[in-house]
Length: 484
Image 1 (cartoon, rainbow, N blue to C red):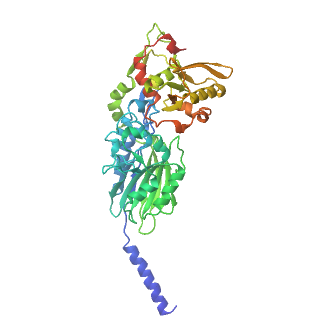
Image 2: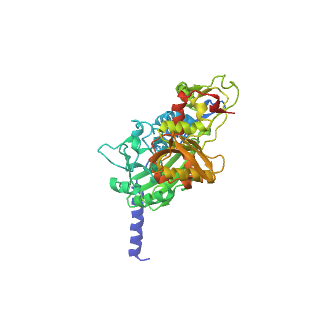
Image 3: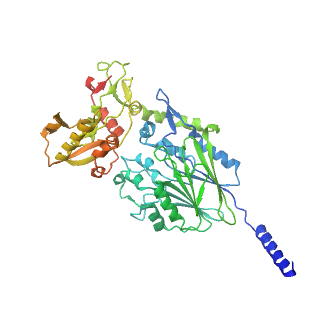
């Protein structure tokens, strides 16, 4: 090797040594992702007593890991999806205790999920829930209903936090109840906001999107510099479509799915490098193996208030109507009657929910709601002639038990309806009638074919449990209201 070549090799070695010597050592980032309890933070015993789930250890578990890793940058982001109107405890308490559990984790920012918003279906959005992040809403004023993002300055980069809903998620919400909320395509929202993400920055995005929507958003993030982490919040209705074990890289983006937040705490560790993309690892910390910490004390503190909400008496069945120890169910016809009365519709057509037997003559909220499932209630405007056709097809095609009707009477003979009356008056073919349906009817294999969903009015937030809680208090129960 000649002297010139040796000199070039020496210069190269010195250059590499110099770069190594001056390479910056980055502090690791630990991101805790509490939430996704999916109304599983409080469970019921067979005797309908509330007990805390293991995820009540979340605040103390996070504090423990922070103490064991004092040199790391510790960040807490709430994922949302904590409450559900389909869970009796979450419904009765309006999701208060799930939100309080997340709040005690002291999150740097928190996302909101569609099911979290449904808790406020019959009221205004609380100040607390409006502090959650929701990115893809078109701004209607200088003060948006939800902050679209959170940005936190770290030692040598910025950490961005976003949260996106999909089209189906928005469609499930009573948006008109909360003012002027206008959904926006996730990719379009990101382009509109145009966050000033630097090449060293990292973004975390919680997504309540289907896979196609998520892939579209990934393509949009790949147009921005920096590193982007897309986290799908999975549950029973939305199974995981990304890896649940290790983040997978797609150009500038990493993807992962997390589920069962009531059982495990996701911990995302980010190791930054001088060159190239950071290293990411996902740990799922099981609550069952964690120290109890303050969990039992925290639950004991809220137990009296929770009991008031769960055991509120709605009605009593006197012993002249039913012996105090005899099991009973409500007559399914009450469902249709209550829905017609509460919604002010002309007719109600309901697929009766399955109901468990009850043995206590004192009907509390938790006893009632634990006996049959909650569901959304919809209303449509239907011309009389179309209503006749709908009912005829139901009677022809539906297997027993057929749906229950309220507000309409008729006789069915020779495959046709006779003497049809709406209330006390004959049905008028060209008149429009308001007709109420429950979601079970709409989802039934036959009901889904017979009923055009485009004819439904926007969901206004009314659910079956809302109606029963309101109507049962004024029902004077007689023998005909009950079944063995």
